[in-house]
Amino acid sequence: MRKTFYLFFCIMIYSFSWSQSTFTSGLLPRIRISSKLTNTIKWVNGIESRQLFTDNTKKNSFDYVLTDISSLASFKIGHNSSLNGGYLLRIEDNQVTHRTIQQYSFVYSYHAIRVGHRFVTDQTFSTTTLPKYRGRYRVTLEKPLNGDKINPNEFYIKLSNEYLFSYQDSKLDIELRVLPFLGYELNLKNKIEAGIDYRLSKFINSDPKNTLWFTINWFYTIQNPKNKK
Amino acid sequence: MALTPKIILLFFCLVYCNLFGIQEQIKFEKEQRIKKVQVPQNALSFIDSCFTQKKIKWFAEKSQDGKTFEAKAKYNNYRYSIEFDTSGNLIDIEKTIPYKSLPTEIKTKINLRLSKAFLKPKIIKIQEQWVGNKKALLQLIKKGNTLEQYVLNYEIVLKAKKSGAFKMFEVLINTNGEIIKTLEIIERNTDNLEF
Image (tube, rainbow over all chains, first blue to last red; front, side, top):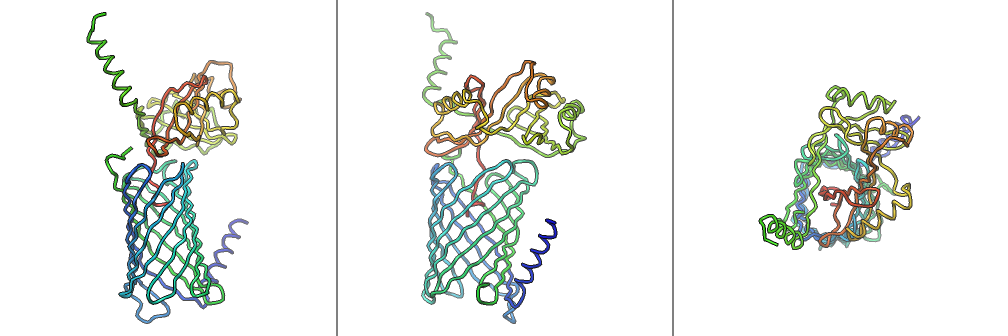
């Protein structure tokens, strides 16, 4: 019964997302470097780029899209929660876009899994478009593939689901994201994850837009010797 | 009293501990899933006598206490970890329990001790640790009690504030509320769940 339900659900999603919709796919490599400044403050910098492979609305779709450079300050405020704020600079078609970011996140550890919740608001400004305001929530689950804990040189799986609400030019849009990843913990400072970042947007009152990014994440931690413990 | 070398050494030890505080040992533990055939026979026999279900997970574990074998099983809705030495001799059994299920007297002793030893402690996980002979521990699993002698301790994973930040600790505490061992757990980075 459960299998039938899942199959039905998958077919529904599949037909819904491919009928008269736009589809783009590409590569999205991402690097996140975090430095622990004090016991409660972290500085997280990131760079990500997008390379388009296919776009069913264009003839020649193999194209470089954009690069994002971000910098966030993270303040640990409780047992498992933190407040983060920062700025993102987007370089796309020789245009620069600015984004301010506010974030609250918390992580719970259960028997063998860790679950992270992230709430974000951001504001995007550029000289060519009207400001865009977004609210987003993401839940992420991480589970080791061997044992109850993730140790160095071990694989893990990571599943994320994100909901984005955006408001621009008096228009509201909702975007759904599903991100299954296979991760590998090289050591306590390095993690590499590879997977898919599937995004479905503009499905209210218009043809849905599907985007499939093949994503590679590298998380690196710079440990200040004074804050090693 | 003459200042013998032993007294001088003791004096310096006391001064050192008072000046710098006794540092908690860092918990080191690495477990690797193994197959049943890799486990010593007497460990397998004990597990077969404890549990009827087939789903037993076996691990080879390396920690600051050395190399051990560990069986993990779920029985009557409780999670059990049964630890053996490399020859298959039983070391201890740990049973994960809800904190609220502890007797009020024990809860009071634990709370009192933890709030003296830590700043803003928050219990994350609690396990009963049983140390004793095979017969006693088998009866504890099967019946929940025994007339045989055994030692009961509590292994508590908690978060508490240290040096201005919340850190994780594993504390072994006895039924009198005395701390036997404290280990600091180095938490895995959460960047991949937050950013």
